Length: 295
Length: 336
Image (cartoon, rainbow over all chains, first blue to last red; front, side, top):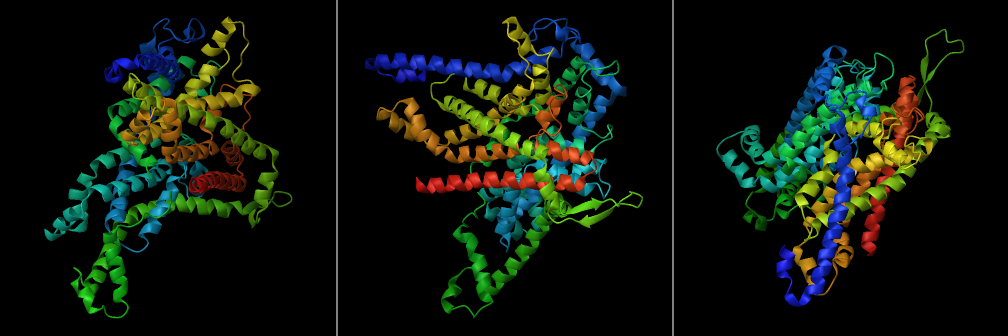
């Protein structure tokens, strides 16, 4: 649209070329869209099918509509353990993300706003830790937790989830750029203590960054698989990711195995909270990713 | 990346002043400074105490959940459980030096898992990043339509938990269930995406599907930060969009490309979820397919010391590769 109005009349051949490249671009984008969305579409369609319906007919189109009975079966399977798994995931993700965000906010704020010896060293240590992915730490954590009997407890997953070096990094960058020193000085002149200044003034200014930290940590805990599958053998403590893979590993074999359509429906349901979070908080997703790339 | 950020002059002020008060008395000329020496030193001490109180809770957990497990794992890797001849008395733990490392590196299965992950990474990471770069450039192009929709569509796989994506793909490739195999069958092709030869490409596809959008968004954000005048000027000079992309945009998003490469290398090193879940529909996938898989197997066999040694080897290699790449790119950046 805009390109057309800007192109002077004498450049018509160029305009035709522009049209061609625009269609070419659109074609490539559509192909990519099919690649990325078709599997999700298959998942959605399959969650509405009966077990036998999965093996007959077109995989990408609806058959006998059994979505609601599938959902009922998901929640009734194994004495209703699916809702327990969802609840566990919520406990791990909300608890871990809330604590880690608060601790990261405090640490990042202190690193940005106070001068002390060892500040750069601390920050560099945190930065190095951002590069260590959580799954790489899962086996060491298991080795360490197993002699102190933290394996197979809520704490086995909650404690590691409470640390977010990325959160400290983001909080420091954001606090440094957005909390003015004058604001803190004004608080001090009013006689407020340092923690009071932090909790009533600075944290409010840092709120957008804290939402991002919370979101990223929430998602990384909700989607984590290796750590909980190592730590939790008791299926009553497992989060939904571990539980569903447990169902999937039965391969639909035998009369007691969970059927494929139920695993698929459960997988679809467990992703809903994240897709909702993602769609409703897009702004914060992007700001976190940008913070990751601008160094 | 981990280089210290240069401190603004205002920040450097109090520190140097505080340090100097410990030496000879300040020269009279410095009396003009807003805060005299002794007070600054006191304030600095107070600031350090407050900062310590703020950082302490995070630092304690960080030490416990990052530093301690790493230290403990290195320590564990140096010991081994010794079973006495007849197995009648309780096993004892003895110092083993580096022998666990020797055993792990001698184990063809473990070596094979390292090599396999390396090969998957060498093929998959470039394919994914080129795709991410192309999509980011197209999204960034001025004439592209429906940008918001496409951006959302490409990023959606990342919003799906990795394990759920893996379960979905496991069914999409599982013999008997796979719509892809069914379509190929209609065309008269016999296709088994979980056969030994196609396992690695199938896993590569799962990774590419899940992570391209994430990388694309990082590169796209970097593209958006390029001043518009730059490509406008090049366009005035008669530069085609393709040449603008190649000569201006790609060089300017180099840091983002380096970053996404490093993240992808580390991500590939810790490959576990996708093969573990694929294993449930493809029993031919060996149970030591990737290094983490192998270490997990050692834990299940109660062989903690071997698991520790294998974890350390994997971490060191992943670090060496990503750090080496970073340094290499930095040096090339200076040479250019």
